[in-house]
Length: 387
Ligand code: SF4
Image (cartoon, rainbow, N blue to C red; front, side, top):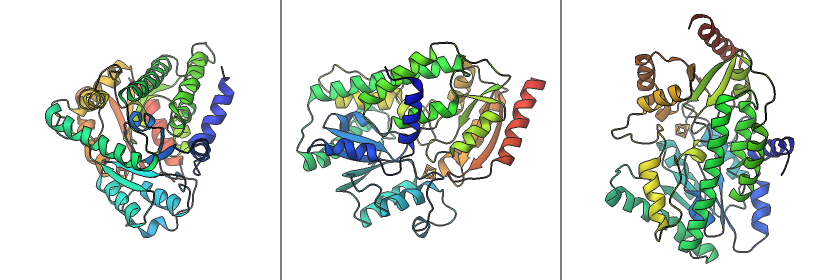
């Protein structure tokens, strides 16, 4: 088993490799391999894996690329992530990608899929609409058609047909991936000092750009490491970060929150890797239906999803209570409509249940953290001293 230091070093390199070298090398080993890029949040990676493909998460350029061309495509009052993605694709960082899927999340992403089409990037560009009707006969059928549409595109490229056996096998591997991630989160909730959240973030994010088989091996190594006591608990509060499900905060901001006296014990960053709660059936005659049912019935909560009869505020409160969090930090990207529209009702739910919270906005390329450190430090102190 690979040791933790190596896993961490590799994760840091993989999760911010804006040239996607790993995927390119992986593809070069077999003619029928395809790479499909997808934007946040959730994408059913199982279907691509089952037809000899690798789904690669595209999370923007963060604070690691100067934006020049990207600014020409969006107004100044739009979030930062689409600019970084345009910059990368126009600079040829995703030349080896065969296709792109833009899961429905907001109008900005919908427009980005249009820009990819106009710029003729990849062999196909698909805007993936998720069902907002949760009746399996209606929304479920629609979602299965959407997944089949993606499979048709891939078939045109590599001639690999989906089989029940292959898809069940892929579901099994991703079930294991989710189980391992959950086990790591559960353990870390109790012993957050054993690895920092910054380390965990890199490890989970690396899983979006490599094969699930390799990520599962990595996660097993991390779990093994976490199972042993190390370090000492510090006088910090436990917090949940919420609102950064699409554009990711800079790593410096994550470090700042930790340094300001917080253990981050849950979050919605890279949420797609933990989107489905529990296992998806992996032994049915209709695995596409199993994926669809899991989406309709076992999705987590998020601003990008309609919460019929299951309000997000209550679910966030339950998460905070179950994980014994001392407070919630709402951290949303500047100009992110879905996050910023939702936060007031989530704050109301927190107030109703006496859960302390603060809020700030960020940009993936934010460079100054002093004000945020003071704000989070005061939040942490107020909870330690007066609760
Ligand atoms: S950060 Fe928010 S507004 Fe921007 S693309 Fe993502 S979901 Fe849409």
